[in-house]
Image (cartoon, rainbow, N blue to C red; front, side, top):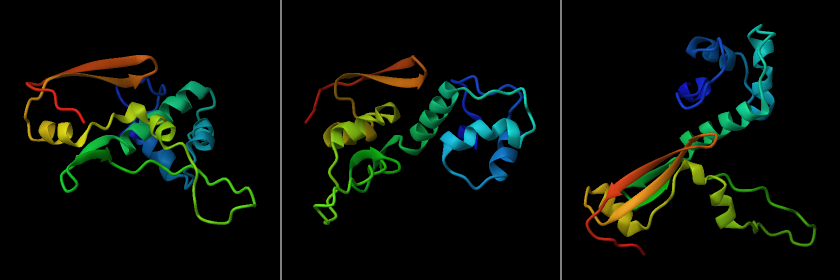
Length: 160
């Protein structure tokens, strides 16, 4: 729900707090945010409220960041997105009827780069255990053109 109301990094909508956000999302079963968000003024009887395209894009980005944030998986001993990235739609050219999905996987993963960067398994395990292994700067997007730089001090670099 906090993602729906947005966070401190984005201004949000004037006059809409947690209660109105809850009211809005409880009145609909739609899940497509691009068509849903422009309807906020109608659902909440706030005719003077305008929803910009930038707001919609940043809202979707905030939700994707929450859903696909990079976490450490202790069972597999690696980092991965909390929820797997969605698979692009299969293009059916009529010639091939098998279930092969052709996609540029690296480009697809790059579409969610703002949700975090997956590190090598060795580095991820060492960081998860609290071991220091060199110096690392990580750039994290927190809004339109707003980034924070996180400095991680490590005692030895071990990249794969």
